[in-house]
Image (cartoon, rainbow, N blue to C red; front, top):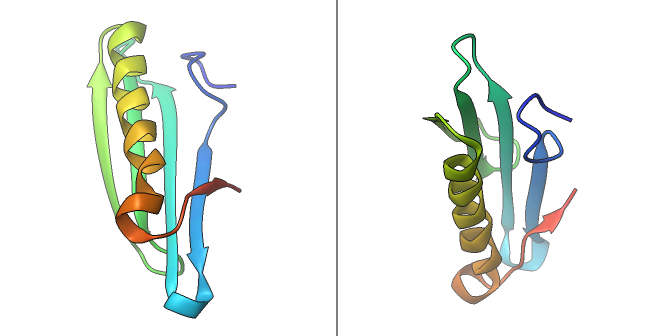
Amino acid sequence: MNGAGLLPNPVELIALDPARNIRRRYSITVSVDLFGMIVVESRWGRIGARGQAQRHAFADHAAAERYIAALLQKRGTAERRIGVAYRPV
């Protein structure tokens, strides 16, 4: 468990459909920096590629939890958007 107590650390999701050449990954990591800010890092991209990353810092748990919920809600719509659902690793 991370210092923030928000999520199991890290959350790893993948979306696979070899027939359609879809191989995506998504991860969310939560940590606390030296100043006590909650840092939420999300990484995404094609499996095997470098991918992209984004970090956001929050002063309180509630704001970080809302942000994480929004990220996970967006991943929940993947089946409708790309035709393959994300699943936990």
